[in-house]
Image 1 (cartoon, rainbow, N blue to C red):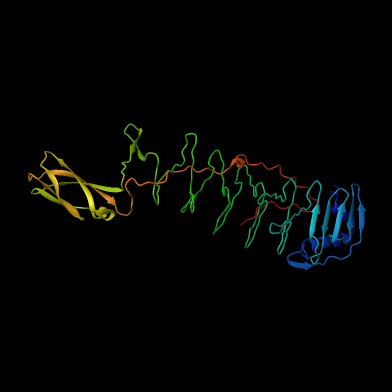
Image 2: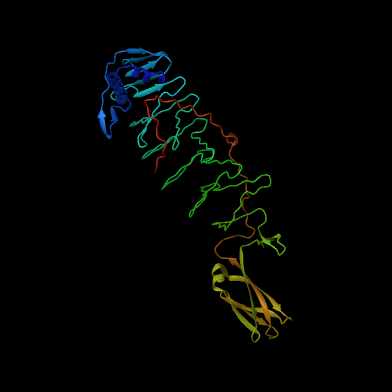
Length: 408
């Protein structure tokens, strides 16, 4: 079977000695002067690229391929009449290390049969290790039975995506996670926005979901605005909580506050909260006169939460009236007496101001304002990426990579 046209077919037409020399030249340039030998994974050998290359040309049945000497911009160039080319320079030059160009396929293809080795590796001290640029298709495309593209960094961004008008990073999956992040000690996925939405979820089911085994599923924080804000339209609910809810702060509602309780027939009934223009706590009890009077002490827990210097006591006698009244009242309790000296039973109600807040009577507050949601029209229909680019066939002499998954 004939090999594909291009630099590889030109190298194959030469004698074994010449092929080995040119392959070693290309390896030295790709690795920046450092390459692995095929027989030992751990040994490195330094190869300096020649500074002068004679122009040579070979012609096969499809197209001529030429190896040219240095020019003003590259160290060496391999060109093919069909449009494919590869250029490179030495590690000590200002040339491009390796540049691959193609009109219809991939400019550079890297293959490795060892799972621990790299098909293509780019290294840079202060620039781009690997840089992909495309006018309309993917700048960099990874295709794998395990991980298509992996980014690793010890102190910066492992993978960085930027866009002036589109999506910086876009993930899509038919059955798994479109985008997934993991961190053992920091944020699995972090999002920032200076003027719009940091995280946006759109779904016909759950737009955003947070799960935790012992921490916080979803956490919202704000310095001056709303940490969490929900809007419901069309008869839905702005929020629903299935479980205990705790509010560390004031709670206000423009509507009714009520409990929903199931009756004996199985129907849910609404029972309303009792409101007051002032902040009161109240307690209830029952007692019986002995010798025409009885002393009642305020329960210590209740007394610690209210203003005991001034509180109200309401009496309801059980049975015929015997003229009950509060004969004395202190910060620790009160005495109930009977004008007729009877020993009747009665109910009492104590109402006192809440001690830990300073809530004025009919206190004026700012009414709630509806928060205008961010402009999300451009996110209603996320763009659909085009078809994945075709993976070119490799020459028969290059072993296909194994399909085993890389284990952690």
